[in-house]
Amino acid sequence: MGLIYALGAYLSWGLVVPIHFKLLDSVPAGTVLAHRIVWSSLFVGALLVALRRSLRSPFPLRPRHGLLAASAGLIAVNWLLYLWAVNAGRMLDASLGYFINPLVSVALGAVVLGERLRPVQGAAVGLAALAVIVAVVTAGSLPLVSLALATSFALYGLVRKVVGIDPMIGFCAETLILLPFALFHLAFTSAPAVEGDTLRLSLLLLTGVTTALPLIWFAAAAQRLTLATLGLMQYLAPSCLLILSVLVYGERAEPQRWLLFALIWLALAIYAADALRAARGPRPVP
Image: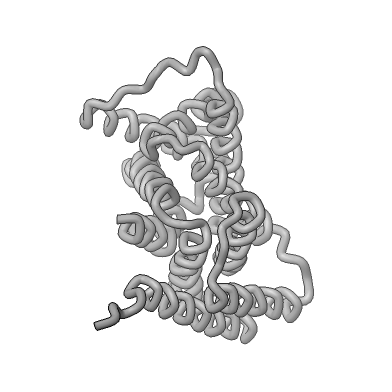
């Protein structure tokens, strides 16, 4: 089930979410983020009621609640950067960020959680890292937006893995932590985003669904898979985003981006082949 949850999350982030938010590019990123938080909290709250799940009182406060506050802050930063990149026509920068992110996840898994890679897996990760380094060097400048996206989401994945809370309840807690800030922004610091536009209102309402479901699936996958596997599977999302930005939205991809794409997928093929071989295990001796 971990692989299914991960596929659902990454394909949603690579195809459904960017198309959805591109349709909202006339709305400021901060306003979309605030709506995203409000409608996500309502959507996940309704899911909990429908499934007859309940939130426990957070008092007395425990270290777990501090970790959830940290994960809420990290995902809010990541959302805001992503929305800005999509609305500013910089999907390729977002794509590069999510290409870099799995490498950060693998590194955090090794350093913080002590996860070990088999030699072939290590070679696959090294090839992916080399591809990203080549892409960054040939670009001629440090991609700050891409690095910020990569780091914030990798840290979010680490915190959600460490906190060990039910994915849906954890996401509900995160949105409730962010909800007062979102409501304050909508009430006092942003201009009305709808103004009688039914289509725009519908798109803003749907941000609750396209935000909550992939993140719940991602948290469920994070509890079932190693960070190394989760991180390398994440190349599905930026690969879809790269193709979408070029073929649908007409952004220009330099040759080094296509080299990056080819090397990343070669690394994925190596990693997947090794995982399948390990899953089959040694043949029994007759």
